[in-house]
Image (cartoon, rainbow, N blue to C red; front, side, top):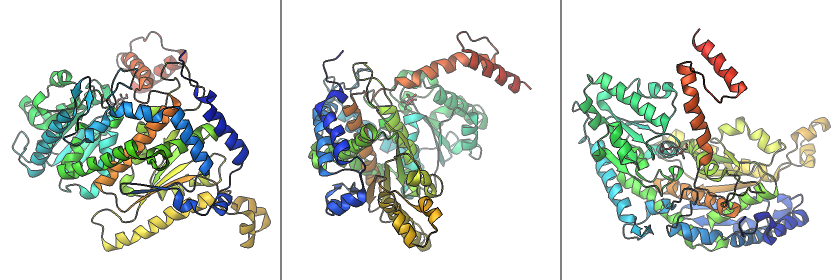
Length: 549
Ligand code: F6P
């Protein structure tokens, strides 16, 4: 048993419980605004280009003060410094956590294990830039001398979600003459659909895998190589012009048959879900070009600096992290919605699912003892306004409290026609209307005043008091995307620090992988699998008989 006081035994925790019971038993945003109209200006934090409004939360100055005290008591800032300093804060894997070094300026010195990692980061960025420029200009050609027109990233989890999300987010900045696709699923249909209309002679595969052992990725990469060679007369030499690797594992890359000269390296102190600003972002860099990629890194850096130096009262990741703790631990909220009012951010919630849920989906503390409190929420969402016509009903009138982040922009990104640009105000009218409706609802009196028959009044009443954060920026640029991602990275960090869990391992994904390896022979060869439970044995038998009829 560690001598760290248990989180829910701390006086700061008790103070929050008491405050909730005493002052915010049935919080009303109408009343909170009536009592303190200034909160609309005061509960706003600016970081980089982001204006983050948290006035529509079920909090008062006292709540925020008590939450900051909880953060101080759990030494969030001490752990933050340890992370930035390169200490091995990922204790179960005995690794440093240095994704912030991926966007450090060239002259910075960040050491881990006695070595400055920054020169290596920039050496890889320079190599990536050189390669990306050659692909974009046509100087890098395929095996037959044809120009590369298609880029297919093969990876999964952090080696897919980040670049795939960012490619969509920055579509307006991409070279439209290139086709860029992402293959992740071990379902052969994914690769099949991605390549069926492509010419192998014009296609570059980027095999992205930190470990280079991930079965889905290696299987898809092997199938992609077969597809390529089938289209190029089986000439093995073609692989060198059509395959590059992004990995920490040079040996496995060479073993797969990719020339280590075509490997872009990263390091074990970069977690998979924190990696798309490393070599893992090569597909994105080819799509948007090295200058835009560096602008994105600058955006990350703005928020890193902010997180490291802004006082607690104005520290955006800290505030967002603590608000999440308020709802998770003191209101019993189980989920958190992320609702971008931007088509380009359509993959952002899926990206955040890995970032948040793989990081904070933990039930033991750093010392291995069980947590006695709730940890990471279920993170979900899709772009507005689509969600409005699907699941917003439940957020507005259901029985669950679902805190939500609304992310929107004052101007559309890219080369839209005048007509399409004009639609942007309608999109954003929905954005503002929804957060108002969620916060302030509609009272029975207001419903009656509209002449609604009495029996329908309860159905048409909106309780309100559904908390939201509004993140607003001028436009979704590469820098703004970097700022947004870093904001969430550090928010997740804050929560993991308070909950006293290791946010940087992911042992929970291992058991399923091991069992899948054990089950596979039973499906393909009909072998008996020792140790299968009766339910799974029956399912496997049913599968086999369906498969063979
Ligand atoms: O299985 C989970 C995981 O390890 C993620 O953390 C990671 O992003 C993903 O698999 C892919 O791993 P790799 O990049 O090593 O192929």
